[in-house]
Amino acid sequence: MKCRNLKHKVSIDKSKGYNGVYLTKNSIYCDSYSYYRSPNEKDEYNTHFTIFPTDKGNGEFKKFHISLNFSKTGISNGKIFYVKGVCTGIDDKNLTKEEKVKFEKIFKEKKEIFNEIAQQFWNKVQEVGKSYVRFNNDTKEYAYKKHIQQIKKKVEDELLSREGVTAVDIDYKVKGGVKSNELAIIVFVKNKHEVPSKLEIPKTIQGIKTDVWEGDFSAYVHTQKANPQTIKEVLVDPIANPIIGGVSVGPFDRDIYGTLGLVLDTDFGIKMLISSTHVLASGPHTKQGDPMSQPALPLGGHYPESLAGSYYMGFIGQPHNIDASLATIPIRNAESKTIQGLGNTRGHDVTFPGDDVAKYGRTTQFTSGKVVSDTFTCVINYQNFGPMTYYNQLRIQSNNPYNPFSQPGDSGSMIVNEDMEVVGMLMGGGQSNSGQYHTIANPIGDIIRTFEANGIRFI
Image 1 (spheres, one colour):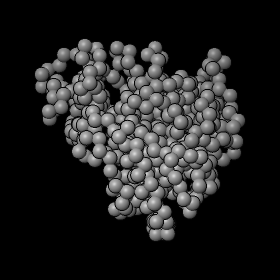
Image 2: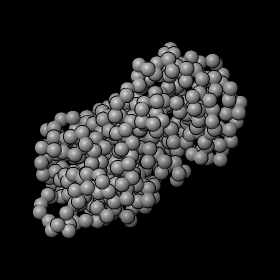
Image 3: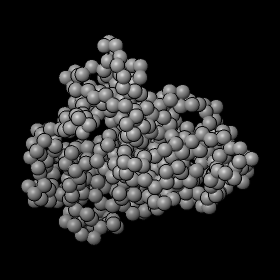
């Protein structure tokens, strides 16, 4: 969709350049009305309206805001708040000093236009509202899940400290081998076995039922020693030209490989590749400037022919709650925002349980799946970094029960939704004794926020 300048009067009705009011069933507010004005490459900002239900839990809608996204990532945004179409204030806390000045100037100059659009939007919602509002338990369940999240947050560290516990999540309790419609705190353990009563997971925690599932989780880097005498027996990757997402990558000082997530453009004119820290960094000793190989060493990489980039910056574990690193691309040809086997990505977005997603990784290549949780908290035991705890990660399961969504070697893969928007980056996974596979991914918003806070802005 093309975007018109705000100086022109706009209509909320569906028309060229506008997708009107629509219902988002998987939004953070359960059922939300949204209106999106899509930006093109020359736009200074884009706008996104969301109407969410009040806390009455009865499906009534009255509040919304207009976001002006200056970074084109949706992270640096100023918000204009409305109640029943009337402006109630602004919020610029996510903006830099320069962006705050720009936001305030735009708001002052175009306030009447924003208010006109907001009133049009509100009128349209009233017009279509009755056909969309559903008087059911959706908003009540959302409120109940938020309540469980607060309790989970208080107890998850203590639960993770227990012997054998690997993760804590929120999901539907399993009864008779089938998921019920009852939300519970899920405690993952390496193996279910009888334990002394004092070590048992309580049946309820602060009034919330629990359920114990099996699952052990690890980082999905592939460790494979490259033997020159048998290298021909290994599927050797070609040197990618151009470098794109989905190909193998790794450091030159260790025989490991993962997946290159994407090549990204930065606001200071340098292309960078992004992948998991445990893929690009061989350990805590990795420093800025260390060389990266594509293909990775175990898959035919050889210095200097396969030199793909230089390690630049990365984060793993707390306090940033991500496993992601960047490397510069000094000499190789690279194509931005493209993933092998998937095509061109179209920005990023948040994702919620129930959303369909896909990825292309070095090991399992193209797979599709479904987000089953965005509240997954786990401990990952890295071979070279030690144990790291991650909070509220994405948990994904394959659409094919016979094939996992990911396997070792897929770490660093970008997870995309049906619109080819990036929603997360794969970092690990695990399997239960019953054969159930789980994939873990960092939400993409956490990754973008962390790098933007450290001076890296993607365009």
